[in-house]
Amino acid sequence: MIKFEQVSKTYPGGHKALEKVSFELANGELAFLTGHSGAGKSTLLKLVSVMERPSAGRVYINGVDLNTVSNRQVPFVRRDIGIIFQNHRLLERYSVFDNVALPLVIEGTHHKQITKRVHAALDKVGLLDKAKCHPSVLSGGEQQRVGIARAIVNSPPLLLADEPTGNLDPELSMEILNLFEEFNRRGTSVLIATHDLGLIARMKYRSFTLNQGRMLQDPLAEDTL
Ligand code: ADP
Ligand code: ADP
Image (cartoon, rainbow, N blue to C red; front, side, top):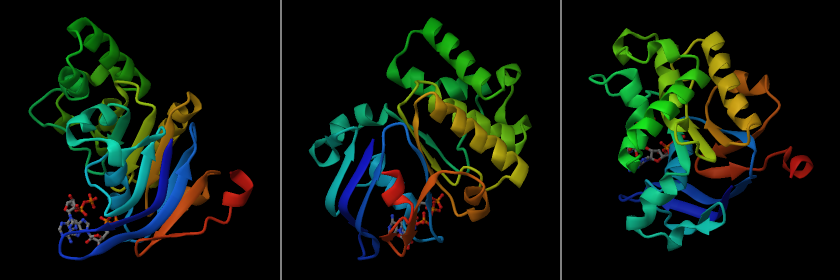
């Protein structure tokens, strides 16, 4: 689903955020991406979602070499990727329904389809009864679930999450992870960037670790690949 080959990213100004990173997330796999703050996790996710371009090396999504994707084609690549941020980035002036509907509205989906799919997405995250609310009246965990509903509303084959539990207590964090597991069971590939090692330890998934822009060898990789 995701393949990095010797990928480096140097930001303007010369900061090396990633150096010769190679790894693979299999189709249908759920895995974690860990490392200290500044290790390069967000940069890696931005290369996958083509918000940044690599300085060297190749990134493949579903077999497509992103170096061959022009800026005009980027929106089509992004349709296959649901992205979840730590600070959920919901639009406060819009209802929960309208926030979740946004990706479909942008795609030009017919309004009957929009209603159906938004309700299905809200149902999956357990927030059907909050569709008419504004995000500001929801709890932190509920707001994060709205962000997840928005990311999955067009059923993307790949979900990326950048510190999705960063602002949540352990119990709510587990709830969010259970949601990711459920999507994964239905076939969605999931990559979750987090520095919450406690959370990872309790789960059976592979984790990729970045240290100052370099990928550490995954001790489980030999067994699981
Ligand atoms: P993480 O998500 O693991 O905290 P990041 O990928 O955000 O790490 O950052 C990796 C390094 O790259 C950091 O030192 C950060 O300051 C730097 N960095 C990130 N984005 C930019 C940018 N747009 N311009 C310059 N440096 C950046
Ligand atoms: P997050 O931690 O939520 O991933 P950050 O606060 O690290 O986001 O970064 C916010 C934005 O600033 C990102 O677009 C990132 O690329 C950019 N950024 C991060 N570090 C730097 C930096 N050292 N110089 C310039 N831009 C940066």
